[in-house]
Amino acid sequence: MQTWYECKVKYLKIDQSGHERKVNDNYLLDAVSFTDAETRIYKEMQQLTNGEFQVDNIKKSNLTEVIPSETGEWWYKAKISLITIDEEKGKEKKITNYILIMADDINHALKRLEEGLSYMLVPYVVTAIQLSTIAEVFPYDEELQPKEVARTPVSEATAPTPPASNEPVAEHTDNYRNDDDDELEEIDENTESED
Image (cartoon, rainbow, N blue to C red; front, side, top):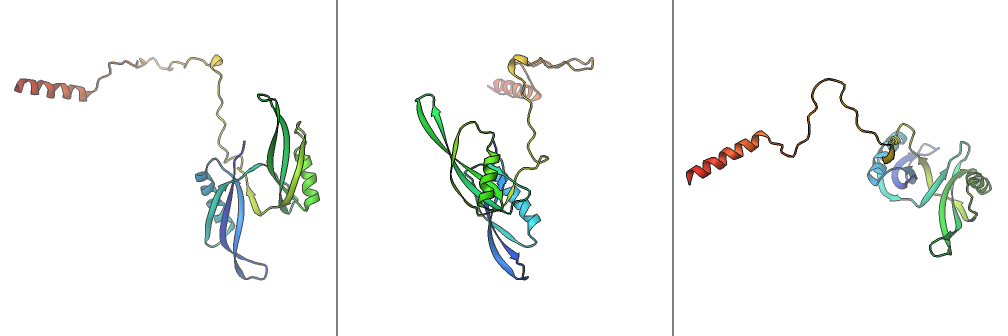
């Protein structure tokens, strides 16, 4: 599951008339930690801006999913409610999820939301949808994503293969000694002979 972080950044932006103005923009990015989020937002902002910028705030976002689009112009934030049954208590449980959708308007955002959530088997209700303050979203690129480590189940684990050469393999012993041990023994013998 992706973890999204919202980053608030202040910088000078040149508008269409050619004048500089101070801007406070919110950016959303996928990261594994706050440190990773900070590193990534600095890297992204260095590419986006020509001048100085200041990262004011980084916080973990409550978004559970992002639905991007090639043609959308705005980011909309939707709030959906799911009703599930708590098997332990036997009661209905309401879960609220927040989803970010790129679309041209609210109607398009609602349509894209329904398309994006068509995989869900649990019925849901859209309780709110509004224009978001997010300026841009930076998901992990494929080459930046941490590599998945293949895990072998314990039952399928195999013994390590021996080295290919004919050289003897060093065995682990609990009676390991090094040169420092010999020096300690010599010091002990000297102190005993002085007595």
